Amino acid sequence: METTVYSFVKDTLLDNFLKLARVNIMTGAYDFMKYDVVMREEGYENISSIYDYIEKQVTDGLILSEYVGEYLKFANPGYVQKRVLSGDRRIIQSYKRKVHDSYMWVTFGIVVPKGFSREDPQVVFYWREADTDTTTMVDALSSLSSIYHKILKINLTRDSFQVIKVSEQEREHFANRLNRITDWWREFAEEGYVHEEDLEVFREFTDAERLRKAFQEDSINSQSCRYRRRVDDSYRWAQMELMPSIEYADNDQVLILYIKDIHDGYLKELRNRQAMLDGYHRDALTRLFNRHKYNEDMKELSKRCGHLTCMYVDVNGLHELNNHLGHEKGDDMLCSVADTLKRFFPEETVYRIGGDEFVMLSTKLSGETVEHIVVEVRRELLQDNYEISVGVESGDCDLNAYRIVGAAELAMRRDKERYYRENGRDRRRRVLNEELEKTLEAKKYAERFLDVISDKYAGVYFVDLQKDSLLHIYIPEYFLELLEETDYSYSKAMQLYIDKYVEKEYQPLLLSMIDYGELTRRLRTEAQGDISLIYRKVDGKYVSLRILEMGEYTEEKYETIWIFSEKVFQADDPIQLYSGRKLSYEETVNR
Image (cartoon, rainbow, N blue to C red; front, side, top):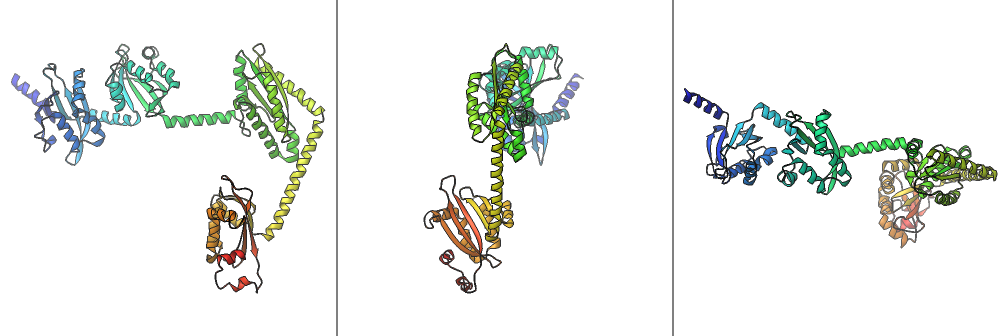
């Protein structure tokens, strides 16, 4: 009866395994105790080492590629010996193996018997068909592995860890060398794997005593921390998460540690957050800090006890400028004042707090220094006929921030009263009237000029050969469409113009003009800065083109002017006599 039960149990247990082998982990010698026909491989009969046996399985393509890395570790005697000799009594790895034309889930394992020793280093290698729970678990871990680049099972109570997933670099450098998770965290930080700006946060988060108390006392479900970790030669944002395992108990704190790369998403989040802050804190016109940021900063400054200097600025004549020349001119004035203030003071200290009011707050500059700077600011703005009223106040902790700003505003009001007392209004009105007259005259002359040349010329353009860009004086509607189609590249627009509007026999002549290298050479040598030519369009009309140098040639700029005008010839004009043949290049240029 006992023999029958023993045999039944033995046969039943063995039936669950596809292959069983007794292995000497030191020599690699093995012999199979069971070898299921499903797992039988051809050409393996003379392999004497189990490590060579496993490597040949991989070489023969029997293991699905995504599982090769983990399975191939068991072809390394050093890896197996280290795992077993360090105390691992059960080692398991699941993978997919090729059987005929399909793949099946297989669980490979190493079992170390109680009698194992260095003198008798016999263990059991086994392969069995994975059960449903195992395949589900491996699928789940594969999904997690695509999200997390490191997964550890750690025990806070014992200060230990077990690797579920980790890079080869960290496995060799930390996992295979250290036994305590606190040592891993400490050395990871000390050896420069954490950005120096995030060291304090990382060390505080990974403080084992703090974590033990947090999970015991706060009954929390998870904790997370963001930091920058070194990857090759750069740092990337990562997130570490700690969650209690199903094995967790207050006296045996088992946690799962996940780390994933969040760099790209987090940077996008930071940019969006900054853009929202900028939208809330920045003045749309001048891009200076606005009233919202001013109010926030004033609250912070009012809590401190220290030095503060305030410069309060009001732009003189904004209302009159808007009424005389329009709000666009008024905006130009405000931007000019803002840009000037940014040149003389750190941008983060300057605010536009109202329509024509600006404030500068500094905890570093003295009132005397600011007064000297104001003289230079006034002088620069006066070059554009802009004037400002200014008040400066400085104080220490016996005056709070709001009182200092109030005193600076009062000083500005007095300066504005002085400005208008000294005929500021009359002077400003006179300047505005002069500017208005100049604007109207320029507009009138420009309109008159365009009226005159529109009948005489087919197009007049300033062209920068270095930038392939143009500033048109007079441009016909059809050529404007060509420019828009070519993103305002003059040479590309001319190419379209030549293809569409110029007769084929004249096209090479014009194409040579948009070879800027050749054109530059001719203007500067042969043509002495002036080229003239005549060509015919598909509608039969002749056009005269004259290209002239404008100003001096530099590496950054080479401006030319292109003048197109239609030509009308009489019946006895020589060009009509040549209509039956193509004019030579020299004849056309001379015409």
